[in-house]
Amino acid sequence: MRKKVTIVGAGNVGATTAHWLAAKELADLVLVDIVEGVPQGKALNLLQALHVEKSDVSVRGSNDYDLTAGSDIVVITAGFPRKPGMSRDDLVRANAEIVGEATKQTVKASPDCILIVVTNPLDAMCEVARRVSGLPRERVIGMAGVLDSARFCAFVAMELGVSVDNVQGFVLGGHGDQMVPLPRYCTVAGIPITELLDTATIDRLVERTAKGGGEIVNLLKVGSAYYAPGRAIAEMVDAILKNKHKILPCAVYLQGEYGIRDLFVGVPCQLGAKGLEKVIEIKLTAQEHAALRRSAEAVEALVKALPSEAAVV
Ligand SMILES: NC(=O)c1ccc[n+]([C@@H]2O[C@H](COP(=O)([O-])OP(=O)(O)OC[C@H]3O[C@@H](n4cnc5c(N)ncnc54)[C@H](O)[C@@H]3O)[C@@H](O)[C@H]2O)c1
Image (cartoon, rainbow, N blue to C red; front, side, top):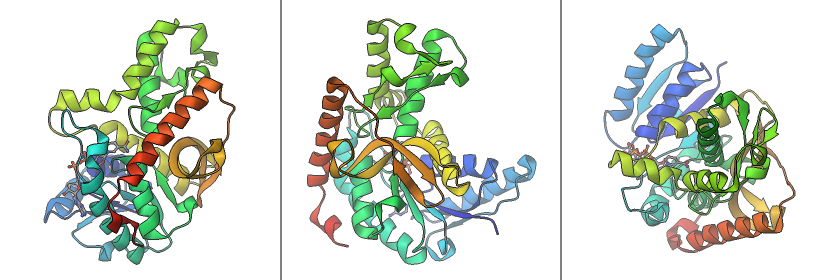
């Protein structure tokens, strides 16, 4: 039997995620949105494309959760995106309510699912999903690190004029302007970028990565990024559904790793069929550790700002 993935929120990120997943023939898909006709229309539109793509998965849309029953993975993208000049943090109250409701309905229909949270502010919305779902930490995972790392690697490839395929790297920390790209661990065909680029250039790319989402928001004027987020989500879904034991940077509920407890923060994680299999702890310099700490403090402040209803399971 094919696996089943539900995507809650059939907006830009949700629909683009469905597009990537369907093209990869990974699972039968259900799109859920509150706007009548939108999930149904986008599902039908995508289903027709799959004839040309020769992908046999089914794609259905709905305004309730009946069709989602028994999903293996549920991706939550429902909520408002940023507007120009708005920080991810401004979204916290409005989106906590939406993510809380989506989580409640999701878990009722699919008690065994793995939740991938995408709605911003990401790390705080993961905490809402964790509290409301009551699921163990292995099954509530936030998507941000794959996207932020892809941005960093794309900028490095552009700067050096090399194939994106040559570049590997990752970003730690919360999904905010205080994320922590790690140039020391970024390599081009195995060569650390510190051997290939000067410090000023690396600092510029790090800064552009940390503000990478905002750069797109300012260009688009309406809405925020969706192609890269959709592809990043598909990478996590692929790792889980195919039980790949793949290491990807994800937001997970830390339990003392990196000296952080009871907070969702982005770290390298091994993903497989059960969701989070292992948090990979790497040695950080004092400076990197301090940057991660600052990033975690920003997440902590956001979690404290969550409306009290979101604390109710
Ligand atoms: N984690 C990341 O790296 C990352 C990347 C990009 C976007 N995002 C976030 O993802 C979210 C979605 O972004 P988008 O560009 O798709 O926005 P969008 O406005 O295009 O889509 C959001 C959709 O959610 C739907 N929605 C609202 N309330 C709902 C509810 N209660 N149940 C079901 N659906 C509901 C809306 O009708 C809309 O279709 C935003 O919060 C954005 O900031 C996160």
